Every structure is written in C-alpha cells, then in structure tokens.
Amino acid sequence: MKITFLTVIFMFFLSGCSSVVEAPTETPDKDEVVEMPEEPEESAEIINPETRVSFYGVGDNLIHSYVYQYAHHEEGYYDFKPIYKNIAADVESADLAYINQETVLGGDDRGFSGYPAFNTPSDMAGNLVELGFDIVNGSNNHTLDMGTTGLLNSLAYWSEYEEDVMFTGAFESQEHRDTIPVLEKDGVTFSVLTYTYGTNGIQPDAPYRVNYFNSDLIKNDVARAKELSDFVMVAAHWGDEHAHYPNQMQLDYAQLFADLEVDVILGSHSHTIQPIEWITGDSGHETLVIYSLGNLIAATISDVNLLGGAVSFDFVKTEEEKAIENITFEPIVIHYEASTPGNINTRTNFEVIKLKDYTPELEQRHALNGHEGNVISTEKYQETVDEIIAEEFR
Image (cartoon, rainbow, N blue to C red; front, side, top):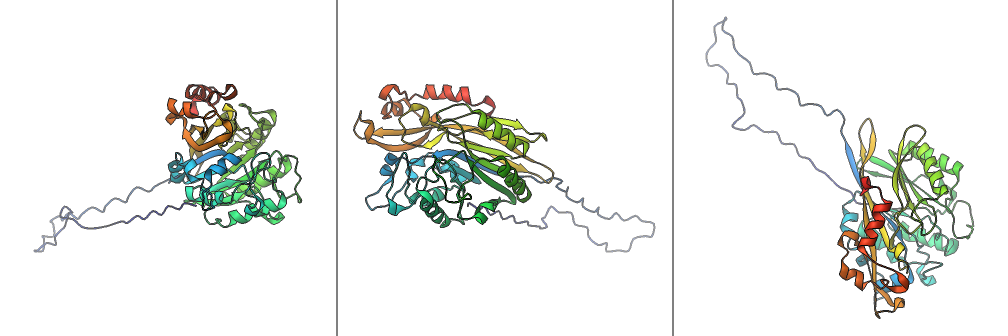
C-alpha cells in the first residue's frame, strides 16, 4: 500500500524586523507610564480539521488467453504492466486504488486458460502491486473456476504481497471469512466487503469460501464493519451480462446497502458501463452506487464490451462528519490489433486507452472494427457514455 509521509518543520526565530523592548537605562518617575509590549494573540485554533483520501477504481481485469499470450516473454515470465501504462499514473497517484480481478490465479503448474474456466498467471499479482493497486476484489463468478485448490493457490499468491495490497473476496477458513478486512490511510479507516451472485454453478467445498448475496449475511457484515471503520465499501458482482442498466436484483440490494448506511458500492459483472447514482437509505444516509465500471481489459469480440471506465473521488472526514466528493467517471477503451490483418484470431497489442485520447487512427487499427458488424468509434462510445452516465459525474 502506498504510504505518504509528511514532515512539517516549524521554525521559530527572531528577525531584524521583530519588535524589541529595551530595558530603560534610567529609573522612571513614579508617575510616568511605561508601556509594556502587548501579549501576542494566540493562533486561531483549528476547529474541524479535514482529512481527504483520494480513490481511483477500475472494473473487470478479464484475462482471456489472447491477453496473457501477449504478456508472455521468451524468458518464461508474464508482464502485463504495459497494457495499463495509460492509466498507471492515475493508479499510482491515488491514495487508494481498486480493481476487480475477474479471473483466478489458480496455479501456474496447472496450465493457463481463458474462457470459460479461467486460470491467470500468478505474475499478475505482482504486476498489479507494482502499478500501485491497494485493493483487489477476488469475489466473482469465476472465483471457483479452478476449484478449491485454485482458490487456495490464489490466496497464497496474494499473501506474498499482504503488506502492500488488500486482497479479499475468497477465504481459506471460517475465521478468515468472519474477519472484516480493514485498511487505514492517513488516520481514516475503510472496510471492504464482497458479494457475488454466483460462481457459474460450481459449488464450494465449504460455505465460507465465497460470499454469496444473502440479506442476513450482509446485515451482519455491514453492522460489524461500521463498528470498525469510518467508511464501508462493498464490491458487488451482480447484474446481467452485456446490459447497460441495472436489473431488479441490483436495485433491491443497492437499496438494502443504502438502508444499512454503506458508503460506496463498486459494481461489476455486466462487462459494460452502467449508471452511477446516489441512493438514500431509511435513515437519510446517501450511498454512492456505481452499478458497473465494465471491463478494464479483455479480448472479447463485441464492441459493447470494449468500453469501460474508471471512477475517482475523495473520501472526506472531519471530526463531526464524513462525505464523498469530486466524483468523476473517465471512459476507457480496450484496444487490440491483429498480427495478421483481418484475422480476429490473431489478437495482440492489448492496451487500455482513455476515450479522450483515442484517435481515428487507432479506431482503424482496432482488430474488431468492421468484424461481423462491430464498430469501434470514439463518437459512438461518447454517445453511450453521455446516455448512461449522469452529467454530474462526467
């Protein structure tokens, strides 16, 4: 985790411009008035100091086989970092940076795979830590793709970086699951809870392995989290794939989270961008809901799934209140090309590019542009953003 040290040095000194009162050389008459220097006024006390913690969050890190093949080096290791170079500065500069690791790091000795049962090289863990991510969600429908062994392997890989990153969403024991994950930044504490709608029909060997959506479980978890932290975040893997708007299940659970006074919901699973909104709970508490940030990286062959986004905002805490401010959505395009022009099965040169930096030249180079009616267009993607994301967040 990125830690910022701030050293403040106070220097007190007398300068030539300071007022100096010299002792009188002669004894004054008893009726003479001697003016004494006024006591300096005390500095105004800071009544309500404010702490700000900046946040940057991205969506699904969906590692299809074409993606890890592109990241492979002849020496045998995998380096995914160049794929994210255009957002690296945003990740590094944020006090807290979040990502949904959609695919499990199930064990390098088991062979790597893409859809439908993913197994991602373990080098991904170190790469994300080097980029500066602080929170990694591992709770989604692919958590059990490699079974219990794969889940435990993933936990072992992430444990190597436990001093630098919080990985949560998969659990090795009941005690592990029951322990609320909390991190601290500049004296402000954060809990991160995770829930998924399912695991593609794969049943865990024990009920504590993954958190499935369950109202009673959620109520208990949130109550304990609120006792331990200033802000409570929820990573929610929910909704319908390829849909731009939340379904009823998302709306119902979003309202439950608001009623429980959760502060932020970070949604995923649809592989598309979905709306951002404030929801008011029973007590009047305002919950920020990001229904889905879409894909961060993927090798899908549908243009709707190649538009994702990042969200940034500030957590603000004073002695008396807390708030979330400066919410901004940044659209992102997943770019890839074909090593053999016109052959979609030769996908390579993967890169995450901000929509504002995506050019007509890049549009033409995109391997999916024109394939089976797909259109990669900055204008089209901007229209989608304008339709889905409220203006106050753009």
